[in-house]
Image (cartoon, rainbow, N blue to C red; front, side):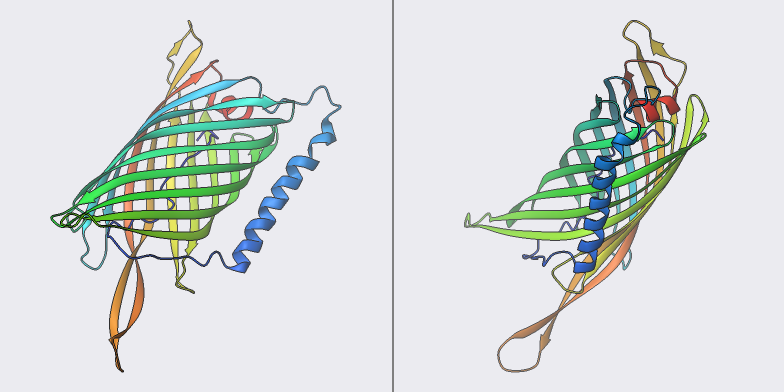
Length: 347
């Protein structure tokens, strides 16, 4: 798949129930050191590797010219939850794009923005929920189109939705902040990518009691990280096949409580022989198949013996299994280069 800014709002697990505050104590010290070390290494590569070939006139540019890619995407998801919870389906539509620009000869910058809506239906207590989505981010990278790249990026994702029953109205907000460092290698018709991402997940719920009008707010803050790897094979000038995997851990305030998430995805990008010579744009089609596990948190409150009313809360972490298919249409402007040239020299 073409190397582009991937904006993913699904880093946080979705717990649709109204719950009390879950204050987070932060990421463990080992995870902090690991994430900080990777980010520092990426910055050193970005700042120190540039002068090595600054005097070489034959060195290829990191970004040949300013370019823009627009994207419209539809995703359908099936989620199976264990322990007789429920089975859910989801539909998500996004539209947006990213702009890539050169910064001198060796560096480039990539900026992206997209938004849309997600509808979730469930056989259980969730019912039907519609969420508004907004995603934004950017990458600063150093790239040699004949060898590979190293980059450091930031992503922000937000989601808003409401729920109501006969007694109360609840407004939900999720916000994800992610800092990602990654590196890629170009070998013939193959691209390889490795990276690590630091996560800061937050959420807020405002509950209004309909009979009295009283409002009550709850907040949660969690930290985590993700490891990622992937590869792309350019089977032809107009066809790219990709596979990537991710594993992540989110640490909560219930020390040592944490949640793990795994995702594997296969995708194909096809550039049909259709272009618009008048404006120099190229149209592409993409399809993606994904499998991933999503943690589902359940809490059990057990009364403890003794004077007064003391309780002990047990947090159980079980996982649902999801499958999805994504269909997308891209419009690339300007140029009619092959998928490999576009990924390595432009986007």
